[in-house]
View (cartoon, rainbow, N blue to C red):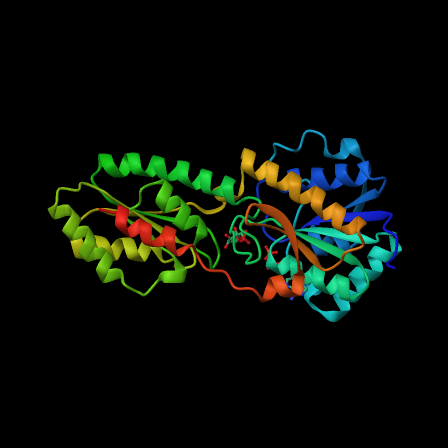
Length: 324
Ligand code: ADP
Ligand code: F6P
């Protein structure tokens, strides 16, 4: 029989993502509804080590479901990657009477949760990252909002690109993963989708395609490039030099991490937050909440971190068929 969970902590860690606030709200409200006490750990693992911990009540999370960012702040913390830091983090939890912690973040944050669990604190991870790069789940909180933000920005670039009969390269985030680029490429009708998972240094073939399309009467070109490939400005120059077509690069950057979460991100955040609390109440630890095959489920963090993720090949090959 495991220990009884009376007080839980909740934190956001790593890069923020729209919908994190909705997840915090769900964790707090679900826990309070089940008779638990809740503490907010501010600034991720850095705040935990510095005991930046606040009491959370129903009203602490009022009016945040629609807001981007995270009211608990977030950070990256080097010390948490050391055994000393990990032991200290667990000791701080014990000192503050925290029996279990919900960590909203990405793979790196789950590694921290894994270590907290090894040090005797129950932990549950919730996938919160715009990158969609967590293998065990088909959905991560923030991805939908980031894609919509990038898609709308790309629509605007398309307008000016068409007016000037230019070639435009738009670079989107995603760290080493190409999911945002793939979804934005499809939703924006890009001619070429450059993603690290399929990149073969084939820039000459992009140039050849642009020239071939110009010959068929095409007047402008949109290329979406993932930050995992990068060098969009250099590529723009290369294309302009080789084709004589004016080419511009736009790096969308952190705009993709902000803004009000979409309906989908809010709903998934609510469901995942409530499920994380249920797992803690059931005395589970070292688990990550996931969405797979139409259902919310959970995985052992060790197993989840060992899984590998690829982009959807059907979606990727389709981009080539549709780009004419
Ligand atoms: P994300 O959670 O978005 O993947 P990071 O990779 O930056 O973001 O990780 C967030 C934080 O998680 C790190 O700053 C660190 O505090 C913690 N973390 C990352 N890797 C480990 C690890 N191997 N062991 C313990 N904590 C880790
Ligand atoms: O993981 C989210 C993300 O926005 C990535 O897409 C990007 O590579 C990284 O974080 C940027 O990190 P920072 O905010 O530290 O520049």
